[in-house]
Image 1 (cartoon, rainbow, N blue to C red):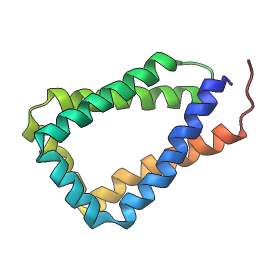
Image 2 (tube, rainbow, N blue to C red; image 1 turned 120 degrees about the vertical axis):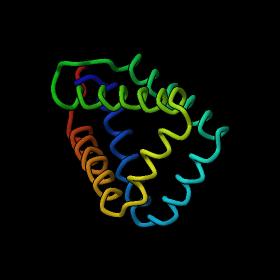
Image 3 (tube, rainbow, N blue to C red; image 1 turned 45 degrees about the horizontal axis):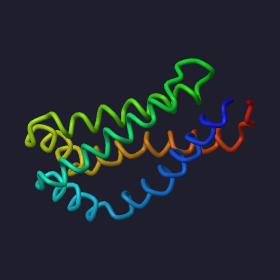
Image 4 (tube, one colour; image 1 turned 90 degrees about the horizontal axis):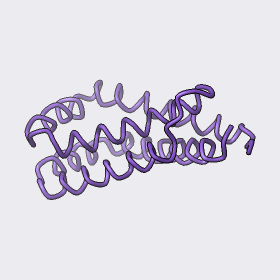
Length: 135
């Protein structure tokens, strides 16, 4: 496994393990914050730009579609980051807001969205710390 794959899997995994439980524990504050975010065009623009930058950086550094599930999962996260950033920049403001806010406001949907992200974080963290680097 490449050192870059291991580093990114650890980074993404730990990020998910730390951030997602915080969002779940503070669900009402998360709903309030996400609603405020989507009602601010300036913040949406900035968030979209950062999302595109993060996605492009990950894709340019790690666009590996073979070599095992860990490598592919890290690559998919990079592409999803880019797509999400582009959506925030390109979709009309009300469209993305309505889609995401309808999911965030529904308690069951909220937890259904958070669970896979948390599980992916656990997987990436576990595999990242278990793997050995091969140069």
